[in-house]
Structure formats: structure tokens, C-alpha cells
Length: 366
Ligand code: ZN
Ligand code: ZN
Image 1 (cartoon, rainbow, N blue to C red):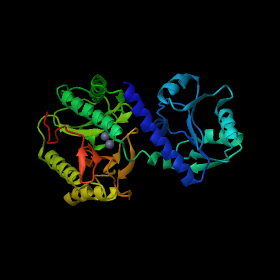
Image 2: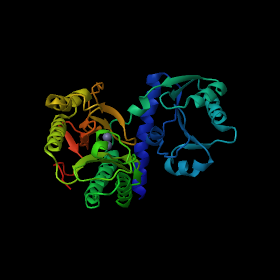
Image 3: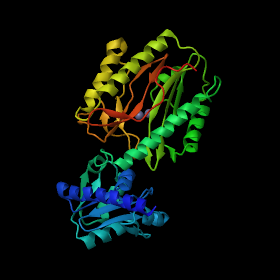
Image 4: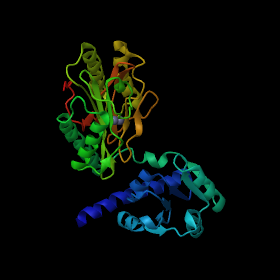
């Protein structure tokens, strides 16, 4: 147990050094991290409110009384500062003065405009917007992070096996979604990584359909897209099945999506660009006559947040590196008919990928 704690602190210390070298690159004296996932990544603190402050000489978690003890436990090598009733601007001002900070970076893609205005009014420093530089530090996962993601995806596989024995015609999408979320927790998840998508019949033509009171019927496509969090790390998977016997049209669409997915899985590896992986799958779907029926990107990174960069999308030029995660999730969606999506989660390696999703992908007729 003792050794495990030590390892955790070491790993987080490394992340802290990455931020310090970023201070030099961005020519700023200190940075105020407000994105919750970034705070957790850098310091270990997983509370919902506060900031992580890092300068060349000081690193602190600034939070309110509700999270003080949590911060002391989760970020043991950090100074923990609890704000008083004068709020964050006063507490931050005190730190900046004692640290002699003139240029303070903040996460412009995360901080609320109202918080920015409060700080701008109170602080006697120049606020420098930094974009996603901190978030980008999370792109290549450590072995420990990958272990957590593997475990989270394994829970998803287990739940898929169990939910197949539960689904019966006449159940509503909401009932099936509730069961999925229950099973995720019963199999060891902390919580769902996003509200489960359960979309049946024509609802499956909406990629992010919200589960409704519609009952699952014979002949329906049924798309199940869900994931969970384990130690804060997310998983994500999708399977589409048919209730009863699949029609020829359903089989045709399913097999095109499957071919697109398998081809992209075969293509993905370190050194290729996200947009090129997307193109491999997109060409198959468009080439089969379904141009206009695949309106989202092929995939996204997964980590502390469910949708991270880099993305597999026509507009992402990122060259993939070993240790990045990506979902590979092509789909065909036809208005008034239904849709299919098949999604696996992989770790990019030098020679290909490690597929973390092991659930069956041949069309299941339930
Ligand atoms: Zn998904
Ligand atoms: Zn996804």
C-alpha cells in the first residue's frame, strides 16, 4: 500500500515538471489551472471546485472548505490553500504578490468569463490566455493511466455480455439505459462516463439519441453506446444489434460499417495522421453509396475526459503517437430507417494498436 502511494506521487510529480517547463515555453511566471481534468492530472486533486496554481517556485491547490481535506489527501505534495469569505480573487492575489508574478496564464478555453472579469478587476497582473497547452500534456498516457482505461473498457465488455441476457421486446430504451448504468457500477465502475445511449428503430438514425419511452420492437436496430469511469479514467464502446431477424438492408448496412471499422483498425498506428485514419473508413462508407450518412468524425481520444484530442476526423492533422488512445467508431445513419455504429477503444502502438474492446462484432440477432 505504501509503495503504491509513493508511485502515485512520483507520477504526478512528473506532470508537475511538464507544467513548469511549459511556463518557460509560454513566457509566463505562473499558471492558474481551472479545468477539472487538468487539475486532477497535474496535482491528483479531483474536487469539483478550485484552481491548481503553479509557478517556478510554488505549487498549490486553491479550493474552498468543502474540499480542503480531500485536497490534502489527493495532492499530498501540494500546498493547500482554503479561500476565506473574500473568495478566490483575494486568495490568488495574496499568492501572486508573495510570488512576484507579473504574467499569469489562465486556461482561456475553460475559465468562465464571469470569473475572468472578477480576477481581472482584482489582480494586479497581466492575464495571459493559454489555449489547450495543459490539456495537450494528457494526450500520451502513462502505463498506469492505460491500465485504468483497460480496466474501464473491460467493465464495458462485461456489461455488454450481461445486458444481452436482459433485453426483451417491449422494454423501453430508458429501462435498458438504467440497467446498463446499474451494471457498470455493479461491475466495479465509479460511474458512467456519459449517459448511456440506447437508441432503437428509427431513433438509431440519431447518433447521440437520448433514451426515450419508446419500446424496443422486433425488427429494430438497437444501438448501445456506453462507458464508465475507473479511477477517474473513462471507457467508451458501441455495439448495434438487431431485435429478432435482421433484414437484408440491415445486414448490408451493418457489414459496410464493420468493414470500415476493421479497415481503420488495421490502418491505425503511430506515425499516421488522425485525418488519414478517418479517410480510410469514410472512403469505404462513401464508396458503398452512403455519402452523407456518416456525419461525425471517426473517433476521439479517451482519458480523464470522455472526448479528448487528438481526434480521428477530416480536420485533425495530428500525427498519432504510441500511448495515445482513440475510439474507432464509424456509422451509417439513415433518416426514417435507422442506423448502425460500431465503436472500439484502442491504444496506438508503434506497429498498430492494442484493441481494448473485446465484445463480439458479428451482427447479433437477439
Ligand atoms: Zn461511444
Ligand atoms: Zn466515442
